[in-house]
Length: 114
Length: 112
Image (cartoon, rainbow over all chains, first blue to last red; front, top):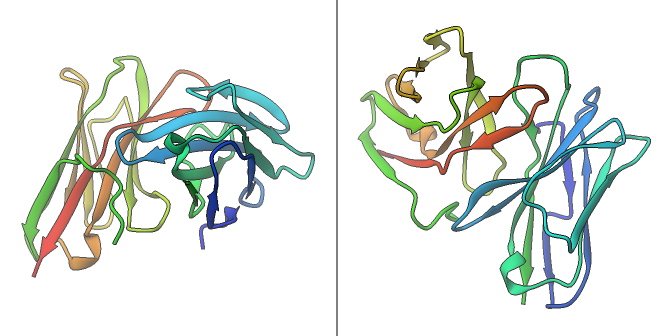
């Protein structure tokens, strides 16, 4: 157990629908990152939050949004889903400012859009 | 098990041999590098890291080498074991913040 908890583990939904993925960071970590991993794209950075505020943005579609709550858990919202959104979505956490140490990843949510 | 990528480079080694996994990074300003291991159905797991002011760092059975001149990173695994079978990613960090950019990954297969 990495200490980063993602729910649900699997999600199957239809095109056009909206889903919410949840992430609880490792205890003490203030920063949360979301990554998408698809078969042909590898790990793509979506967005980072630090202590409730958006810190960095990557290749995140306008149909996607995220937030980090006061208790530091984060949610990634995916709307108007398309078949191409099927992927593994990973959350990772870290202590920003530590200067060293990578992320700790959760075990991911596998999203299948049918 | 499930495949992380359809077109990942693959390295096949015999159990007990040494493995060398290579990575070319993109940004000469990157100052911190990490190797991750991802087993089937799991999230990436930290293996070893190195700062740009070093050219070698050793861990338990693993060594990372950094060549900044040619922007090349390698991971050496000594006495490779079946449990080392996984996809290995290099990642680089540039400047402030903690955003990591990941390489495409290499599939390591250990043959008995």
